[in-house]
Image (cartoon, rainbow, N blue to C red; front, side, top):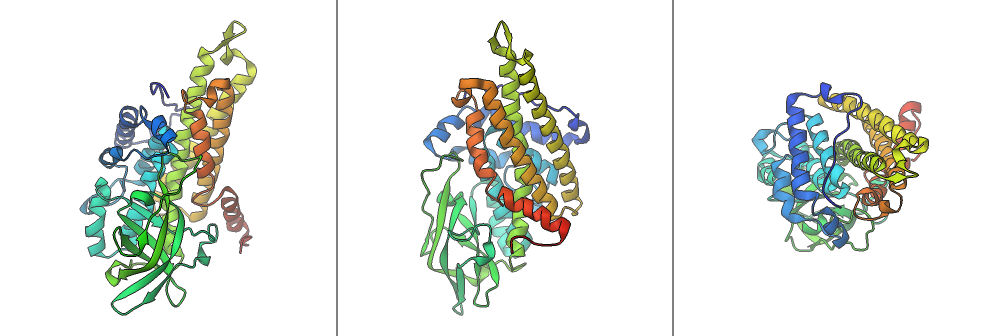
Length: 392
C-alpha cells in the first residue's frame, strides 16, 4: 500500500456525541497507526508475520485493556473509548485489531473480572504495556460453535491440577507469554486458568498456510500433563458463562473494528472514483458508481449508530449478549460487502497491494467466522426474540 491517505467520514456528525477525551484517544490511535503501522502492514501481511516491534506502541495508545482500572495498569477508560481504538486499529488491518482485542478482552478481561487480587497485580500491569502478551484457549479442533463439548480437562492431583488437551485457532499463541485456558474438571465443570510459557508439557506451535489474517500470529495450544498450580485457577467464576462473558467483550470490539475496515474501503473507493477517468469524466460521475458509494456510506452510518448505542449500554452495564451478537454480525457483514463493492470500483487495481481493499476482504472472511459465526449470531438473535434455541 502507498501513503496512508485515509480521511475520516462522519455523515451523521457522530463526533458531536463523543466527548473531547473520546476524540483525543481516537485521534492519537489514528495518528500512531498512520505513522507506525500503515507503512509496513502490507509487507508483514505478505510475509505472514505479526510486526512484534509495534507492541510497545500498541500499549502506549491504550491498545491493551484501556478499560482496566488504573490501579492494575490500565487507563480506566470507558467502553466507547475501547471501541474507538479498535476501530482505528482495524481501519489498518483486522489482524492488528485481533492481536489487540485478544489481549484486552480475552486475557486481561477475565483476569480482571474473575482473577484473584494476586493474579491481577501479577499479570495486568505487564499485559497493559505489552511486556507480557497473552492468548485465550477455548476453541478446540472438534469444538468451535459448541464450546461446551470441549475435551480439554484437569485432574486434581492434590498440590496442583494436571491439564491435558489441545486448543486450535488461537490468536497470539506463537509468541504469548501467558494463556488463559478453559478446561473441564472431573465433575465436568469448566474452569479458567492461567498458563505461563515454559511450563513443562505446554507447547504453542504456529499454524501456517492462512490466506486471511496473515499479519496476525495464529497457533495451537497443546497440553501434555501440564502441572497447573492451584493459585493459577481463576477463582471468580466458572462454567461456560465465564468464557462467554469474555467473548461478549471481544465481540463488542469487533463490532467497532469492522466499521474501521469498512471506512477504509469506502474512503479508498471514494477517492479512486473521483480520480479515475473513463469516457472523459471521473467514474464517480456515473450513476452505478454513485449508487455503490451512497449505499456504502448509508450502511456505515447505520452501523455507527448501532454500535454507539451499544457502547452506551455497555457503559451502563445494560448491554445483553444478544445485543452484542447483533452488532457483531451486522457490522462484519456490512464491512465485507463494502470491501467487495470497493474492489469493483477500483477495477483491476483493487486486487493489488497498492490498495488495502483485497487485504480487508480476505481478513474479514475470518472475522465473519470467529468469535461466533455469522449464522450462529443470527440464531442467537432468533433465540432471543422467540425464546426457542435452534442450535441445541
